[in-house]
Amino acid sequence: MDSITIKRPDDWHLHIRDGKMMEAVLPYTASVFGRAIIMPNLTPPVITAQDAVEYHERIMAALPKDTQFKPLMTAYLTDNTDPDDIAKGFQENAFVAVKLYPAHATTNSAHGVSDITKVDAVVKRMSEIGMPLLIHGEVTRSEVDIYDREAVFIQETLMPLKEKYPDLKVVLEHITTSEAVDFVKAADDTVAATITPQHIIINRSDMFRGGIRPHLYCLPIAKREKHRLAVREAAVSGHKSFFLGTDSAPHPIGAKESSCGCAGIFNVPAAIETYLEVFEEERKIENFEAFASLNGPAFYEMPVNEDSITIVKQDWNMENEIVIDETTSLHPFKGGKTVTWKVQ
Ligand code: NCD
Ligand code: ZN
Image (cartoon, rainbow, N blue to C red; front, side, top):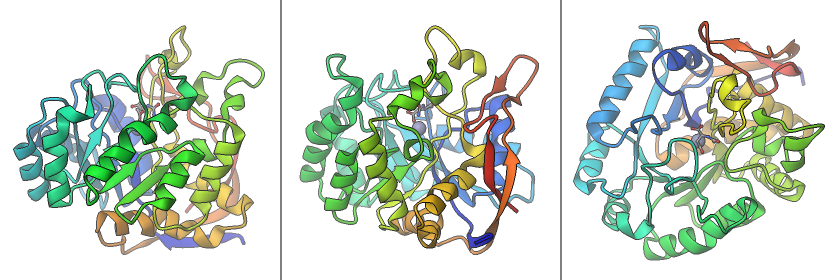
């Protein structure tokens, strides 16, 4: 196969930050994807409907006037989030979903939820109005091993939550374990998961291959090979509950290559291509369109994008460094390596 045409894909999990960084990274997404779920973990976070409206305006101002790209806004859930503001924001399309960060689970999550019972009124309302809850599924207790945090979260928090609110629509974000795959497969169609390119390409040993590799550090952290294989199988299976979410998360090179490096991988410059390489390796190219362009809209009850993109079999070299300004550069996923597909 030397080219493939699919309905224009969407990215159901994306960090674009704000200001200069946003202006620099947004074109990579807007040139390929029709829509993207914009994660709200700014400093300060996007908490209210008004915050989301203002962030949406800044994003649109950074895009060309005639852009077809549509940012889908989310609310950052805190212990003090007002259920009325969330419901009103959803009805008025200020945001499409709420993001749950357990406090201190990841980058810019200090304002996150300290205990799921504190947000019960918000979750109850979301369940009633059909608003999806997007979950960073990791417990944060320091005594729980970092490699076990996703599996423990599913047991301790997610299963009881879904038992209490069976109608609540949930996306378990950036899954990394066979436990997460099993949970999603066993659930009904109120439950889905996003899958990143890195979690189907690298395992935890790759983070230490020949020395420590800070640019492969993201959260949830890459797991053992058996987990990579389970998530990879789920991604390429075409199963309707698994769809594309890059979790592209730009951090300046200096913040990654540090004695205390930030979590997050900047992968959008070759996201579609690297996903497609996996589908090709697994001989499942026929399921690529479902994963990239169909399953997400079905879960979010949105139309599939009308136009298409074509990706051709063509080698090109991903640059090592993408310059943002005089002091800031990014190292993209696959930087310095050959990518074997190219979006036309
Ligand atoms: C994300 C970021 O940098 O905003 N980092 C990451 O490692 N994935 C936050 C997140 O999604 O956990
Ligand atoms: Zn993320």
